[in-house]
Length: 420
Figure 1 (cartoon, rainbow, N blue to C red):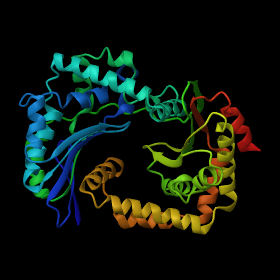
Figure 2: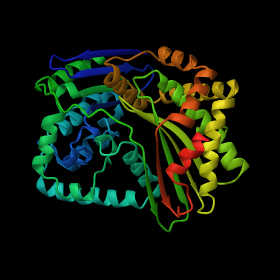
Figure 3: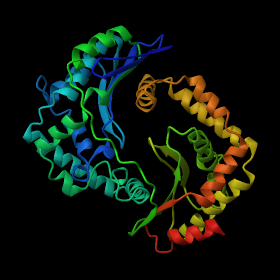
Figure 4: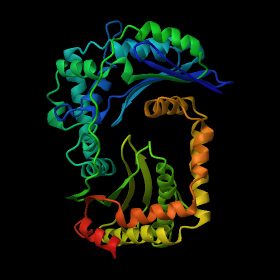
């Protein structure tokens, strides 16, 4: 498999990887325009725009967009994150040009019909309401807000109801004009693709675009803080976040190995101690996520009202214990899980196309898999213990609690336990 990368004169980037033996391809446009690129009065507009892309263009109605891909047995979708908005499709190899044409159409030529804006506004408001009815969704929004208080990175991707209720056609067009320039776009494809053909089509579809600078996102500052809402639910939801490296920092590999060993699987410390030994919860996990300039290691669990205090205390104790006696065997197991997860995921052309796009966005190139594996293998037990010490004692923290949580400790009390 060979990765090829090119760039049009206007800054539009193309990256692809041919995967021999496949009869299908994944292809999409990744735009560096997510939640953190919004001004406060725009909060939620990147996600609104993603919805509107499928509601009609100058050449196709909403139904024709869906039919164009589904008539050939493919599928098309999109998502918005805090750093990107992606529009992508999966089709058979003979339909790659069609998929590119449809994706290019919805990205470049949305008409923003006022009637469709009102219809989709209702859909998004329902989506926001559904999120508030899903405790293990809303708690992560609150945790993000406390981690990056009063910053674009801390705001919800869906946006607040009052903002979404007020967005106009001009607001949508303005965000596109500001952020959807060729330098902000990456065409990524994997599977049964021909790079030269992709280049030719990309030139035809995107070569006319004029460069635009876009909004440089505000540098993230992990502030920490606490959000707590008492509500009559079956479970108390507990989420703790700790400041971690961004994805341009090689320490991200240590952070990910640490969180995997701490709470990344059934053999992890938190799962074994909190669930298997003490029976305090059904779900508990730790994970590390990263952005360009910051990251968070997050621990989440759902438990009963009378056990949330014990669960929180044991979580801190396990974090401190990891700094003292994390074993070489645990680190080796976590490294193996990371490498296997990465390599297994790359058997999917959709995952591979997304990885290519993200790497080009981060580094403007695609480091080899061998480089990534070598960096994972280079993380030592001593590295993980040192990172565990930082997480247990020093790292700034944020806490979110939801449900019957009157008996849960405060962030200040957890900080005292960390320092003890």
